[in-house]
Image (tube, rainbow, N blue to C red; front, side, top):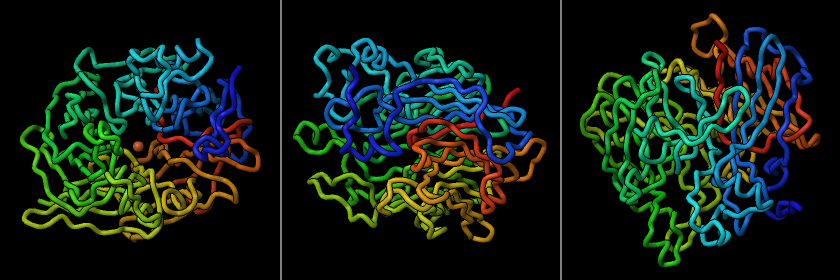
Length: 464
Ligand SMILES: [Fe+2]
């Protein structure tokens, strides 16, 4: 008999409370009008542990669940499925959690020798006809795009020896997918490996890069000619783990570093910068000899220092920030907006190019006293303004995903898709916003009868 999730953990209740079922809803109730040109599937993913966790709960290791909104002809169909990893299957057979999410020492002894396939809960992307559920510590898990059936781990025909970041980048001109592996040798020595898969999905180049120190590197950026890594001093240490100290710790005295490497090959060059934490990049581009990188930055993350001290709450707030690297100059850091925000996305036709707009989940998150985001934002590099659509009272938004309007090539001309959790209904809906007029509110809402638990990232895959 399944047991309830612990009600005292804020990451397992309210908007975060996992759901226990998989379902198919062929035709959602629509409020407003879904644009007729929207034709494809929005895939979203996040942690949704199948059973009440063993020991402490780390959402970064909660079983991934995919939520797919299939949009065509003004209608929306919905399907959700867990990613059926090896751990998920063993737990389903056992009828309870066997794998601990926070501390492997809490695993059930029966699975102590079972290698994890990862939670597959962080991002879901499509490339070269494959749909891949990603979590940065492990290989991708391939998913059938229609049925959402789990097809199994994917290693690019043996060319990906280790894990894959959950934040690959896609070159809009070449169709390449660019990505990296943190800790490629599992030596936790600060090395990174950079990979390029061509438009057919075959890895055509892998380069190992020596980094400044072993750190959590969650995202990176590309330009037309370069890849950019921002390494922040949220470090990983097995020595600390063995000594009973936090294995992942905040060490601001190490400073941050920016690594720049030509995409075509060559050495990575590292530039020092002031300590801060950046989980997600918005975009990057070249400007003559300079490179601009836009990202969401916090002064410090919600992790302890090696001796257990936490940063003040206010320093956790995240702001859109531009880093500029110019030859012979120190790294310049400039805050772009005073609106707290996370989950930055762009019109991906501008990936690696100068872009005008950034789309974010805003008003909430770390350091604000609210775990959830309450607005969708559109930052305009030309005006420096952040336009907002505020969700109604007691509703919370996910990351917005941009979809270009059919036939339009103008940047930002299209739709933003996000899920909204409605606390009053304890249920979620999909919202469709006109990206350049998001202040006007949703043009459509597609209602579910259940909750889409607060998750991480998603992608829209156009049909055809
Ligand atoms: Fe992420």
